[in-house]
Image 1 (tube, rainbow, N blue to C red):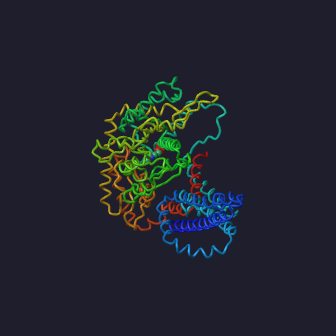
Image 2 (image 1 turned 120 degrees about the vertical axis):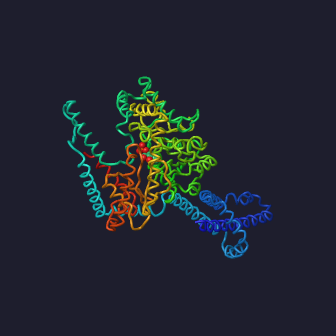
Image 3 (image 1 turned 90 degrees about the vertical axis):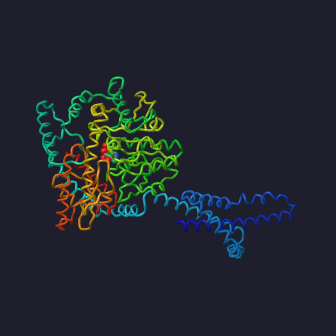
Length: 626
Ligand SMILES: Cc1ncc(COP(=O)(O)O)c(C=O)c1O
């Protein structure tokens, strides 16, 4: 690309110089003509303005400007100076070569030729800029694949075939979902059902659901042990807030007070200062969305028209979603398969004048490792770029790690570069589902994602987050949990998670066929295969059959597990079962072929993105259909 640009620049400079020479000649010729025809002053003004008025002079300027834009865009200032030096070297031989050719033409012909040349160059460079922008945004192979797919799928036969396949998938999924559904209701009952009957139905469902859960050791999604006294307390007292709406603080003052206190207590855990503030949200995704929105607006305030977000590839899907929702350009940076963390050098290189924010995970979801936040923070500070630390998953583990003897770097508001942090209460914070907090370094950052409408016919309207009305029960649950457990309670539970994880990590290191992704410390682990003879997804399948609910992750192919208060007591069983499954896979090669996860991810990688997305949406459709 550099070479093309250099050639392009040399050509443009040669042309412009040659044309300038020609014009100079023309004007000096005109000058001498002026001297000889001073007696005819009426012709002088036309000739003396000839350079400025010359049509191709303007176009030539435009061509130069366009080229400068290309150079700015590619950050190729050095290429321009290189091109200039090259030109200086070849100037004389080139001029000698070009002059006899140019001399042959008359001035009007030349003007016409240069006009066409400059026009073509301008046109080509604008196409080049557009193509570069597009390639930077979307890559090259994927859009080509996508484009061809869009064209091909318009062919009636292909269209029918794809629709048939999608319908088939939907039908299979619906059948699976239907197996778990009983006594379906499609329409509102004409008259209300008696409370006793409703309770009977719900009791039946609840018993069946808990049997379904109890037969499995679930990773993630469930954090709170049902037998905890606190959970009973939360269930009992949040019911008073089910119909409360913190938006109307004058009617539900305690609901609003609890929100404010949850934010403040959380900021304390993250070494916030007097200036630290936050917003209580419905979950990690909303917390992340709000941070991203704030930074997009903050960037706009600073004159950034096309904001870009730089994130590790392993950052949570919520960041990708934010880019889609808010029109931010996504710049994802590769991560190491060995360490599971972002490649810092690449991340630094991805930051430019359009970067509206950088995000790191502490830890990430796919493999439980945390990015090198200290180095990245120092760089962000030097570049004046806001930095979001995603602590959603480890929200109630990371702040206790140091105290539990787990060595981790600084990751919170102690780092001056950290401008926001997301922390989920509905995970290790043991609050009911639907609570997270996004914290900001100061009110200025936070104000950029708050919404206020003053001209509305319904009156002045303002909300902190994405939702309007929201229930008070979830935040009341978070408040009760934080008060009940206190620092010591969370610390004790976090320590149990760390010790179980350490035991597991040590055991896995002794299994030669298994490999940990990185050196995970904050509750989540990912295990990949250390040998070509064993497909990790086959081990995953066998573990599922043994009642372990692990996640099949990719890049690298691995199975991911989250230690939490519901499953840490089973760590010895987990190790034993995993070793058994590994042995089984190693001794029976037939188990290592035709694995559904392996083929799913491999097929997905080959297919056009839009088709895979359509397929994924079909799955959601099946859940939503009754
Ligand atoms: C690292 C990380 N960030 C964000 C989220 C999003 O949280 P939620 O599912 O509550 O929206 C998750 C969820 O697992 C996560 O692991």
